[in-house]
Amino acid sequence: PAMAAAGPARLVRCGQKDELHRSGLRSGAGAALHGLAGAKKWLEWRKEIELLSDVAYFVLTTLSGYQTLGEEYVNIVQVDSTKKRVPSFLRRAVFIALHAVVPYCLEKGLLHLEHELQREADDSRTSQSNPALGLSSRTVMRNWIQKQVVDLTEQQKKTVLQIVYVLKQCVPLLHRLHLAVFYISGTFYHLSKRITGITYLHFGGLQGEDQSIRSSYKFLGIISLFHLLLTIGVQMYSFKQKQRARHEWKLHRNLAHQKNTTKEKTTGRHSRCTLCLEERRHTTATPCGHLFCWECITEWCNTRTECPLCREKFHPQKLIYLRHYQL
Image (cartoon, rainbow, N blue to C red):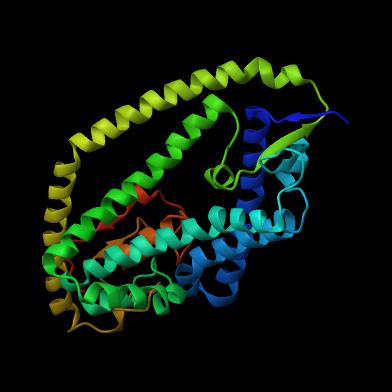
């Protein structure tokens, strides 16, 4: 059958279909871990389970030489930069690493680096009971980062912390820029495919179907670029105000934490958070009246909008941070 370069509409539908199946796989794996090991282990290993699910999906499809479910859905096939043969095994392996493993390592690395730089202002127990950091990377990645941070001066730590903050802001902007470029050019939907040079061909079909809407995608790309430039301008303008607000919140949080630790030393088992099983820090109440650490319950609400104890549904905005709670 005749083959031609796949248009942006097919690539978008392919990406959406793959993301649907990947999210289903991640959700199923997470539910299995939650049921077998409990909420605390699920909070610690959630990111690792998502990573393993994504890697398993691409290993069973792309790396094995098969189409993904999204590619099969829109009838397209991967080719290398020559557009005459399928990508090599090495190229496909690099794509999977860039698409799944590198974003995980970057997110965890920045999170650990930021947490380690702020550790002096927090109790050492805080860094050990934060479920967002994960247990596996706590023993490998964080130990390495900790060794690098120890030798830095205070000024260097402040500089690195600002760089981390800028990187955390720039990564989403980079993805938005790449998406706008895709809308205009209609070639690479994912940044990992652009780096590895993997493109798509589709079998037969009406070629005019993609050509007729390509101009609409270009118009959408131009609008996205203008919106991105406006966003960057606003963020640059408010950068100093955000830094000042973060500094003030850090001071308030440290003072509140010092008060809480002095009060919680005299309390018993009723002051423990049922998610991390540690003494509650920054006690937060759900609408149904149950109490948890602020970090624990907000991390929980990222994926489940229900109380961990009674399963009552609620919106994360309904959480109440108890400022002068003594028990």
